[in-house]
Structures are given as C-alpha cells and as structure tokens.
Length: 224
Length: 344
Image 1: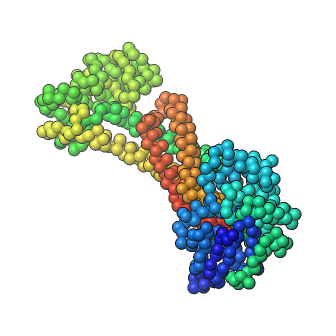
Image 2: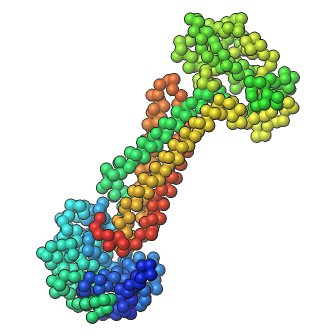
Image 3: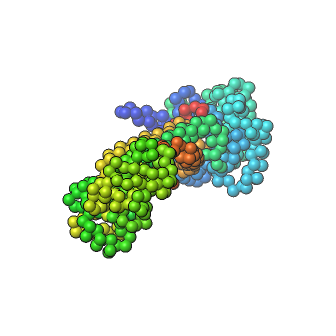
C-alpha cells in the first residue's frame, strides 16, 4: 500500500547569478512496511530528496503527497505538526539533546507529538521501546556518557517512540564502525517490519543495501 | 516537559556562573545606588522628608533661599489662612561643645508646626549623628554669635541638610545669631495647586530642592552615575542572555527539526532568564539590605524598597528583551542547517 508519493520534484539553489539544479524531476512511491534505500555518489541529490520528503526544505517544483495531502502546499506550522506526529528522523549524527537523559529524550518526543498518553503510560511506552533497542539499562544516562552506537540506538528509539508513519534516515551508520553499523541496520529493518513503518534511508555504504527492500540509485539529480 | 529546568539541573556550573555574574552586576548597582541615594539624603533629608506641598520664597530672592525674607505681615496672613502652613529658616553655622570643639550644623527655626521640632529659648534639638561626636542630652553648647547657651534637650533621627546635622533652635535665638528680622521660607503642605501669594514665588518639593545649588549639582552627578550603571548593567544582562541562547542555536535547530514548536523554545528561554534573574536579584537585594545594616554608621546609605523594586523590574525587563532578541535569531534558524552542522 502506497503511503508516500513524490511527483516531478525539482530543486535548484541560486547563489548570486549561478543556479545549480540538484533534482531534475523525481518520481517515487514508498510502501508501508518497506525499507527503501537511496544511493548515489556524493552530490547526486539523495540527501536533498530525503530532506524535501521529510518537510525540512521545500521543493522548487512538484508535489510531495502524504496521506492524500500535498505537503508542498502546506504552511510551515502544518508541516511541523506532521514532522512531530507522523515522521521520525534518524540523522548521520545522533543529535540527542545533551541535557536530557535517554528516557527524557523519548519522553520529549512523546510531548512533541502531543501524545494523549498519561505520564505513567508514557513511561511504560518508553521502557518498551528502550527494551526494543536494548538500551533500557542506560535510561538514566546522558548522551555524553554513551558510545556512538548507543547514541544512534537512542536516536532510533526517539524516532519511533511516537509510532510514526514514515521513518527518514540520513546516513544512519556513517559515524559507526562496521559491527555497530550492522547492528543499527538490523534494528532499523526489524522495526520497519515489526511496526509496519515506511522507511526511506540515504546511504553511501553498499554493505547496508542488503537490508533494504528496494534500492533506488540517483545520479545528477535523477533516479537511474 | 520542563526542558528549561532540566537543562539548568544538568548544566549547573554554566548557569551558576551566569547567575553569579547577574548577581554581582545587580549587587554592584544596588550598592552604588544605595550610596548615591544615601549621599543625596545626607544632603537634604530635612527637605526630602517633608510631605508633598509648596515652598515659598521672596520673588526678589531670585530662587536663592538665602536671599529670601518673608514679609512678617504676609507670613501672618498665610499662617492664618492655612492652618498647616509653617514659616522657617535654614542657615549653616557652628556650635561649640564643652571642650570648645566646633561642630558644623544647619540651624533650623520655624513657626509652631508639627513638621519641625518645637524648641524653647536656650534649647537645642540635634540630629543623632552628633551623639557619635560625644554630645549627650543635657550638654551645654555655645555659639560665637549667641549671647546665651544652648542646652541639648533631644536627638532626632536622620535630619540632615547640606551634609551637616540639623540643629533646631528657638526663633528668638536664631534671630539673634543671624541678626534676622524675619524668616526665609514658607511651606504649605498637601495642596495640588500652589495658592498664589503676592510677592512670593512657589516651588514644588522637587523644584525647591533644585534651587539648592549644591544639591542640584551633586544630585545630577549622582543620578548620572546611577543611570550609567543601570544602562551598562542592563546591556550586560541583555548581552549575557543573548549569548547564552545564540550558543544553543544548533540545539534549537534540532529540536525544531523533530517538531518542537518555536513558542516552546521561547518559553524555555524566558523561563531560564526569569529564574536566573529573579534568584540573582533576590540574593543581591538581601545582601544590599544586609549591607545597609552592617555599613559604618557615618556612611550615608539609603536603599528604599521602592528603589530596589524599580531597579529589579528594570533588570527583568532588560533581561527579557535580551532573551527575546536572541529568540528572534532562533526563530530564523533552519532545522536543516542545524542537522548539517553535525553533532552537538
């Protein structure tokens, strides 16, 4: 079942008198419970496509359809609400809030997504997700005391705690060694299946492609 | 979730340092304004402590009370028409104690009025600061221009004029010392508009204070010191809060990326600003009032509750402006930019 569609999306950046065309008319459909990997050389436009899909920047032309609505026509506040409640993000760096414990990072996300759960239910949900990413034993730790792999696990837990419809992952293993990369990818793939999430992931690591259901290769702003 | 509090709890050292700077700056401002107000009070407490009303001096005196002399007929008429009114004079002079040691005083005499001490012939009522010079109730004081002697009957609190203790004396004694035929000034308390009196010019309390040239010059300097200090302290407050928040732009960008409302970030900044500023102000007010109690007796220091409240509100407003200005920067921050800047 298609949950997310990108139609004829273009993106150009203008610096002074120079205009650079980064995306040249992208069409893409994502299905529930599937992990789609975007690959391509540096500068191929894969990260730009991911950030447009995630509502972090706007397309120059084209449409991004999510649950029947055109996101390109939405206001910033409408997009923020979707980001907060329907999307989950895993970035290249974990980008955890330095002054929040592991448990609080997830509680914050539940607050942001305006969860209707009581505090007790929220704590139970947090414990459940932390168990899923095998981080329950570090729930009171601050990001500074976590290893790179642990931080990324917490970032993944934060990205899925509010049961998003789509998980966007931008090079989630780029800062990890190969063992930790495999662990994180296994986790993302398993969560995609278990929670029936649509996952769009950008990666340049060919070893990680084996975890994907679909592989989309980009070159010069086009899907090839 | 109370992110503001959680951040302060986690980054105690950073917030304690910032709070200490705010505390020290506000403490300095309170102490200096206390000293400046003290000096100002020391210069003219006699006049400043009088109720709101209207002062009158002779029109020919050209706004110099020393040159003023109220016509006795006019004085009698005004006193008859205004039961609360008083006529009085102030002159700088000296008294000699039993050991022939001279003490500078401001002699004050007046018609019968609750605003001034009632003193019989040969009696003198002194400001308590002279008690520290060894003068006691019952002591006999002399003056070179006075044929008789003054017996100290009482001390009063905080009656100063031109940085000298006030000495209330009887009108006849005053007239003998200064060869005066009448009194210099009149005062009618508590009327919104000054009643017009032929041959006399009226002044509000503040206007009258400003006719005292030494007071005007000194007060201008002191006010300039206070306002410069407030302006610099205020700028420091605003800059500190601005810097504190601008340093966290990356963090705010990430929070915005995951969907945190900009309004939530503003509330977080304001909560931290108010918590730090109020804590620092409470401490500095308490310490300043403590200083007031332990300050050497001779040191003029006056910090009123109204003054501290006014300064505190001013600092809160300035801190709020600084935090809000940095918030405007944060409003502009693009989540994508923060994500691309790497880990925090």
